[in-house]
Amino acid sequence: MNENLYSGSESQPAKLGEGKLPARDFFLIPLLSVATVMAMFAGSEIVARKVFVSGGNDPCWVSYDPRLGSADRPNCTARIKVFESPWVEHSFNECGYRTPESCGPKRAGTLRVALMGASVAEGYLIPYKDTFAAQASRLLSEQSGRKVEIQNLAVEGCGPLFVCRRIGEALQLKPDLVLWILSPYDLEQDIDPDLLARRDDLDPITAAKTPQAPVSVLKRLQRAVADSRTLFAAQHLAFQNQDLYVKLYLMQAERSGFLTKPLPRKWLKRLADTDVLVGAMAEKTRRAGVPFAVAVAPQRAQAALASMHVRAAHVDPYLFESAIEDIALRHRVTAVPVLSEFGSLPNPEKLYYPVDGHLSGDGQTVLARALVRGLVKDIAVFSGRTDSNEQKMAGLR
Image (cartoon, rainbow, N blue to C red; front, side, top):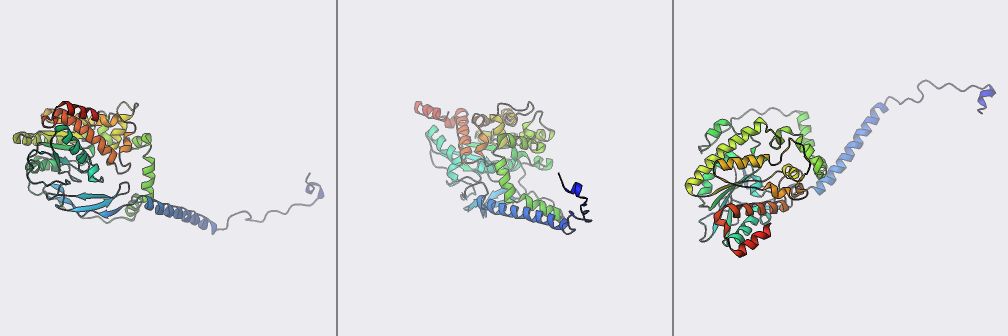
């Protein structure tokens, strides 16, 4: 027992304020906490910048041509790297196309493809030999028994309206096929109705200048956070998980609308505009006697969903490709199916740079095989049907 209970001695009462923090600690402790967090963040930022390196510049890319959209400078070479890609050299021929062959008159016996589109079609962030264009060129040459050359007119940021405006340029190359590779991302920028009506008008498109509003401190802070390499590293790791990535992507209703039934009004309008543009291009290629084909290079979320056995009833990864195929059918244009090639593989989202979203080198191979199979099947000039070629075709399956 406690002897104090019987000793008659009494405990000293606690002094007033004893056990309470000094007033200064109410400021020091939060400051130390913030400083600790900032030090940890700075350390992780240093490590992330060592792992996810970017560098080089792209002097070849002209961000905006008033008549034809984005363009690349002729006879130009750029060496670039972004966080998830290897160092890549982009070289352009005398016409500004990412093609090693000259864009001059094609050699006798050579088949020429005029490839159109934006960054996916260009093979952005991929060494040229690994791009689907280079791989398809080799495979088509084997299938047809003739040299097949692909003049790659595609350029980063070249949306559907500007692809349509460049169809005349493509036909001047005297191609044996015009091939347009598009992705849902290419349609995210809505087309001004007036510009759509003037799709054949090659006069410069001038945009009205709007005064620049001052950038607030909060906005600058948001930009700094968005540019953080630590945040990028966190996304890169999180997006390795298929279920989490797909869930996060579908939460972006505006962006992922092309995957949901029924299609949102905005996406219906975008597809209607694409219908108009495909019709205009089909008419010009038909008059020139040149086959015209379109194919959808799937986005990362599309590919992931196509491989998933269980998904929400209102989500359909094939919805966009089917809509483009319907448009092509209406205008007697060849549509090359691609998504099923990705969907047949386990975890096809690993064929993409996780955050950037462009196809990796392995993804380019899958795209090339799907395109070659479809073109050999539907475009007579590439069929070159012989027993040996049938055996080669079987190797693609």
